[in-house]
Amino acid sequence: MPDTTEKRDNPSRITRSELKRMTLGVLVELVLYALLVVVYAALAFRTLSGPLLELFSNNLALYSAIALTLIIGQGLLLEEVTSFLLDRLRLERFD
Amino acid sequence: MEFPIAGVTVSPVLLAAIGFVVGLLGGFFGVGGGFLAGPAMLFLGVPANFVVGTDLAHMTGKSIVAAKRHRALGHIDLKLGALMIAGTVVGIELGAQVIEKLESYSPIVLDRFLNIFFIVLLLVISIFMFWEGLRSTRKLSDQTLSAKQASRFEMVTHRIQTVRIPPMIRLPDSGIESISLWLILLVGFVTGILAGMLGVGGGIIRMPALIYILGVPTHVAVGTDLFEIVFSAGFGTLTHAIKGNVDVLMALVMQTGAAIGAQIGAQATRYVSGPRLRLAFAFLPMIGVLLLVYRAFSGMVI
Image (spheres, each protein chain N blue to C red):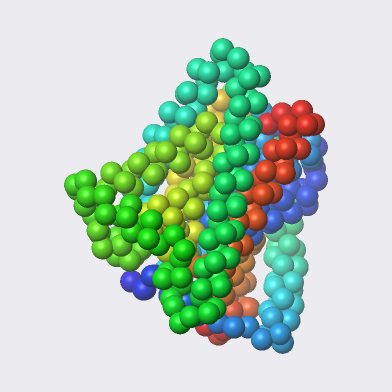
């Protein structure tokens, strides 16, 4: 278990050039992420919108359960994707 | 893009952009960001009855992303989070029921009272955290102190921690040797009641409470609060969805932006000390105050 008691007493100082490189990296990753998301959204919503609307109209209890499952599922999926993208920025090396 | 469940056409890019900004703030400060996302959704034309529920749904997913990152960074006290959830969920339910009862008497007076109360509460939090954060930051710069020692409120927190009502528990992840279980439940319960009454997730109240009342280190407070939001917002999503107030497609779109924002926000906490984080947090409630004042004058309904 990591020591969590204000272990960031002296957080890493980032130099101007490092900050510039990080910002550029974040912007590149954001563009990549946006492209991925657009493709994903187009596919997912085309498939889901019809059945979800039907459920919303006919069975709210089931709709609620599926809605929460979808939110959690997408949360876990996006966590993996964004972690992968952020790890590519190599932010760790500034620790 | 048409969202058939809410029956409205809204730009998905703007929804994702709102999610991104709220996610960034949420990941960095440990708040759900409902006070910001709600009015923004209204501006986009999302029907008022769908705003709160849909926002809670996206908040659930976003908090999963941010909490997982904070967990990896060692910023979550699971034991404290689990105990707080118990107090918070009961508090939120009670707060919501109190409001429902009071609304039947005079909804306009109640709405005005809550608006003023929330503005005052946010102002107090903002001013106090600005004062404390500024002094602690100066103290941290002037002397060789740890970020925890630099807190200007440490004496009061220490006194609160001396309340010895059994059972006493240990929170090693938060560096707390001994604290009354009842104190934790009480803080969760009270912040839950406030959240339930004011119709917000409560992170903006709970985060300072974790730091100044329970004495939790700032970064752990941020992570633990996000962990708690996963459950409280998830619970809220279910209750609102059953009432037909959640457009899950809209929430999923918002979540795509919020996920990357939350990751960046959570990661950014590594480069900021506790006192500086608290100082920056002080500006967050002010945004809420401005939106509430605007709401009061424009008659916006949420």
